[in-house]
Image 1 (cartoon, rainbow, N blue to C red):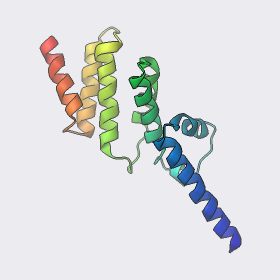
Image 2 (cartoon, rainbow, N blue to C red; image 1 turned 180 degrees about the vertical axis):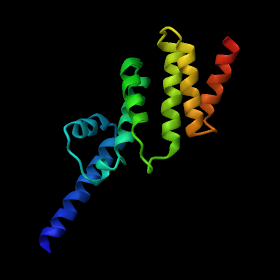
Image 3 (cartoon, rainbow, N blue to C red; image 1 turned 135 degrees about the vertical axis):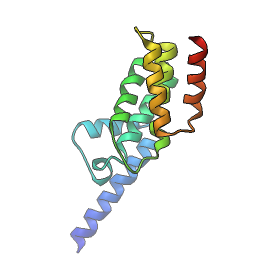
Length: 141
């Protein structure tokens, strides 16, 4: 009985600490734990994985570290989590489109950006960011 309580208490404490880490900007530490193979029910089922990668990608985007942002946002889109709202997937794809459209000019960057905007709209059809950027992209052509 005491052993079960301690296990439950430790799992609850770990979950709480990870939520605090993700929400307060310490998502990189959470990603480190994920990559080291440390899992608990929250990480294992993807509840924290997608949001952790999304948060780090958004921080890198805001700090103008676009290559790192691309890496983390793409990783966030790979994780299929039924508990994370589709808004986050749509926003991650829209930001990837913005990066490719404006800051990361590779061959066919406008086509890549357009594909990410369409992907964002497939997750969230009312994504204002993707709709606005697609309009700007068609005006440029």
